[in-house]
Length: 219
Image 1 (cartoon, rainbow, N blue to C red):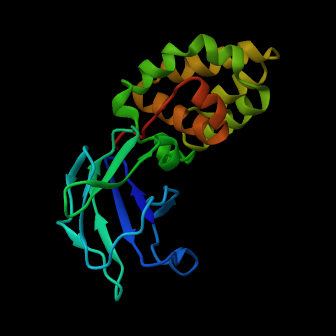
Image 2 (tube, rainbow, N blue to C red; image 1 turned 30 degrees about the vertical axis):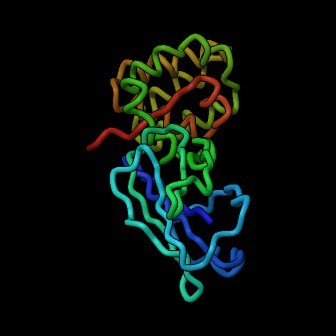
């Protein structure tokens, strides 16, 4: 069984080896960890055998572990969060691979605003990201999303009431989208970042289509 906690700069997987599948009893035990579906080994592991876990991108790992009946054995790994698929390989006593699997990034990167923030460093500054998708944003964004975006930008003090009203009086959807985009871009990287995070929260599908990944700028 695999559990993972995902932070902005690191991922911490915990891979458990059980004599049987106690998923219903263990599911709520690890607060802050996400259960990730993985494949089962083709053959059962021998009890009291030793194993080691290999993850190419890990920066810290447990030593070799024994598969026991009295307590669950688990590997705890620390790795940099680079937003890529994660390869895992379990090696037995004889240095042969007894299990391997690939965890796609979509399994551990959810659609929450904090997860939208994870990949910013891989994609350039927020202002650059936002400016590069201006044309597609204007074409694709819907009127309800624009209205929700305006409310969020006002609540987060990215724009003021007067700026919000100047957009709302615009009748055409596309022109309204242009005004919002240009207004936020003109306010710099921090405001652009906040708009991307809000857009990921309001319309994750559009955010994915535009390949936007934003992060809150430090205050």
